[in-house]
Each structure stands twice: as C-alpha cells, then as structure tokens.
Length: 545
Ligand code: CTP
Ligand code: MG
Image 1 (tube, protein in one colour):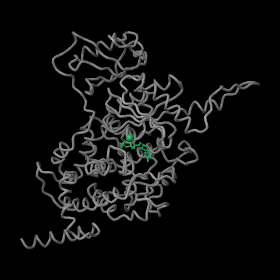
Image 2 (cartoon, rainbow, N blue to C red):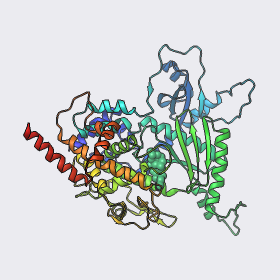
Image 3 (cartoon, protein in one colour):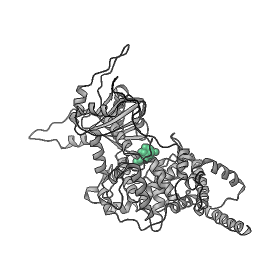
Image 4 (cartoon, rainbow, N blue to C red):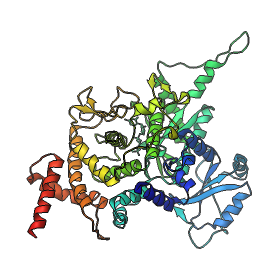
C-alpha cells in the first residue's frame, strides 16, 4: 500500500531508523508491518518515565565545546543520550545510565552567590553550566522544539509529488519529536519532585496530546497529579490484633480535596519551582487546574488531578493513532487546516477544540464503508482481563494490545478521505444528531446545543459544550468550501513547484477569502451539488476551447 511506503520513508528520514520511528510519534508510533514496535501505551509511558528520572537539564553557554562538556559530565557517570536545544538560552538535556550519577553531579554543584537578593534553596535537576575556558567558536547544534511557520510549511508542501505525500510531509514537520517528548517527560518528572515533597507516593503523568500520538510541536503539556496509590495503601493496611489509621484531615468532597492539593502544589511550583513562571490557579473550573509556564523547556503546562478518565481517553487516541497510518496524517492536516482558518484557537472560548475535532475525525472514519477504524464498543469487546478499567462508575475498558485488532479493510487514499471528510461534515445534520465514537453511529442529540460530541467514557458529557452556533456555522461553511477546493485539487495533475497546490491551497487563508466573496453571489446548496456543477462547467469550458 502506498500509504505504508510513504509513511515509512517520510518518518525514517525524519528520525533515522525504525526504533526511533517508534518513539517519534507522541510516545510511540506502531508501524503495522512490524509487531515488535507495537508496544502498549503503558509500556511506552513507563519507559519514558524511567528515562526522565535519569535526566537533567543544563543551561549552557551557546558556544560550549560539546566534547569537553560531555567529558566533564562523564566524571559523574555514563551518559546514555544528550541533545541541545535553544529556548531562553542554550540548554542540554542529558540522560545518565544511573540515577547515582545525578547525585554525584548534585554533590559537585554549588548554590549561586547573588548580590542584593536572597536565594530559595530548592535543589532540582536544573543546572547552570559555568565556564570561561571550554568554549568553542561555533554554537552547539540545537534541535528545533517548535513547529515550522505556516508559510514555510506551504513552501515545503509544494515540493511533494501528490496530496498524500503532502499530508505525510505535514505530519513529519509538525509531530512531536523524540527529543521534545523527552523534554516533556523531564518537566513532568521535575514537577513530580515538587509534589512528592508533600506526598511521597504521588506520581505525575503527562496526558493529552503529549502522549496520545496527535501532539504538535509547541502544544501544551497536560500533567496529571495522581494520588490514587496513596489512598489504596490506606485501605489495605491491617496487621495483628490492632489496626492503625492515619490521623488525617477531612474535607466535604473529592472536589474540595483536589482543590486544596492543587492549591498547595501550585504555591510550591510558584515559590520554589526553578524555571516555573506565571502560575495561575484555576480551581473553580469543572476540572480544577494549575497553569504555569516552564520557561527553560518553553512549555505551557496544565496540572490537574482527579481526572483519571482523561488518561484513558489519551490511551484510546494513542490506540487509534497507531492502528492506521492514515489517521495521524489526516488529523494533523485537519488540525492545521482548522487552526489556519481560526476554527480552533489557542485562546479558550466558543471555538471547536483540537480534542473535539479529533473526535469528529474518528467518527467520520468509523462511518466509511468499510470503516477505517473500529468503534470504541468493538475495542471494548476485544479487551482482556488486564484491560478492565472502571473509573468512578464509568466503564473505560478497551483492548490495549494492538495486535488483537484486525487491520482495516478500507484502502481509500488520504486525499479521498480528506475530501470526503469535508463532504461529510458539510452535509451533517448537526441540529438533530450527535457524534459518538463509542457506537460509530449518528444518534439523536440528548439536549439542545449547537454541537454535541459524546464523551467516549462519561457518556452524559458533551465534549464540545463550549461551541456556539456561529462557530459551528463557520466550520460547516469552511468544510463545504474545502470540499469544493479538494475536488478541484485532486483533479489537477500538473503542479508548479513554487505555487501552492493541493494541501497548500487548503491552508491559504487568502484562497478562502476570495471564495467567500464569490460564495455570497452563488446559490447555496449541498457541497456535492456545487462540486457536480463545477465539474460540469469545467467540462463545458473544456469543450468550448
Ligand atoms: N479532555 C476531555 N474532555 C474535554 C477536553 C479535554 O476529556 N472536553 C481530555 C482529553 O483526554 C484531552 C485532554 O483532556 O486529550 C487534554 O485536553 P486539551 O489540552 O484541551 O487537548 P489535547 O488533546 O491535549 O490537544 P492540544 O494539542 O490542543 O492541547
Ligand atoms: Mg493539551
């Protein structure tokens, strides 16, 4: 299948080698030809977390001599991996083989002397390298941690052979790199160090787009502070004729407990967390959170607690992302399209979110004939004992072993799927139907609201509750225009290298502005009718010439 060939080549070029390919995409991409790379989500997360525990972040002079730098650090132990990046100065991420090496580095590290200020002596795994003599003339080679600007991306897309290749090139440019994922897990591990000062058994896990295989370079870092293990241990501790219980504070609800804990951890991050700035406690949200910026890593972080279900939806998306190559290319392309045209936004509001858009894409793929991906109910049917997860009364079970899922019988090309996506939502009856990836079938909306996307696990929740009618109307109008453009682009076989074509056209806001103006004059109708009339008119024009 050309899909596999293009993906394999494009991704191998990006990171070099199958093993790294597996790691390159949102915590692990599973190529369907090779069962060895089909690791479960839990295995991938565990490995990343272990790596992060052995890792330090060092702010360096930009022209540090790399060899001398590595030799210096090797005094403390064997380095398994390192890379540099630029962000508020040059930084090195260094992974040691053993955690003792970090202790050795710590014992050789002094606290800074500052004049007219006082230090808060919280010693983390963030260091500053000082040197006058081990500097070279050239800057160290740095890994890019941000996505390519859209105009440069469009130029790059011009060079591809066809629309399918363009989509894979976009994926290759935008997806999180192995290095970026390492940096994200390192930040998670540094926040865990702060949380465990109060709650030694606490864990902090990344979730959302960092791990669900749909993360774009520059996306936020969603962190989950997990105190569940502590509670389990309290429940099982009984020995001999007596039992002891912790004397412990009580609060009226789990929500209040979450708010209190996040409030205190937020204070600690604000007061002691090296590199953590702009801490905001947003504790009255449906899902209370602490938002802050990790400046050295260049990451915007959202720390939450008590939303274990979101971890399951991250794993579910990961499963889908690994299941069929076309899916990630399609999601990245459509997320990019939505962002360029202001359908999604970095600012919270009445916009469609990336998560909602992804649900819509999954639903569309379940509706193809034959389906590209299975329904969530089908994945639940394949679940083994080890996959059983009931969270707060919600059944969140689904198969974790990718090898148990039969490959799709659908072999539609990516450009066809893209065009069909626009057609599908250009004509979808949003006023009557809701989107539900558990069933993969339209169902009546349970309540009045512009867009209803059922949360796959908490089935009474609407993932897109925030979306208002005008934002939905914009999405539909844009989908219709894009269906029209796609049809036109698919039919064109000759492309100029320096002019936007294919996806490039779809990502140019100016093209849509022009069409918007024509649109006002044109009679409205279903996109399929307009495509048909366009094709007819092209045929007529062709004959006239
Ligand atoms: N989530 C959810 N319901 C919502 C919003 C979010 O269950 N209405 C969960 C999803 O698991 C989502 C995660 O919270 O992946 C993080 O949310 P968010 O950061 O908004 O989405 P991401 O998937 O991380 O995408 P982005 O790249 O835009 O951050
Ligand atoms: Mg996110």
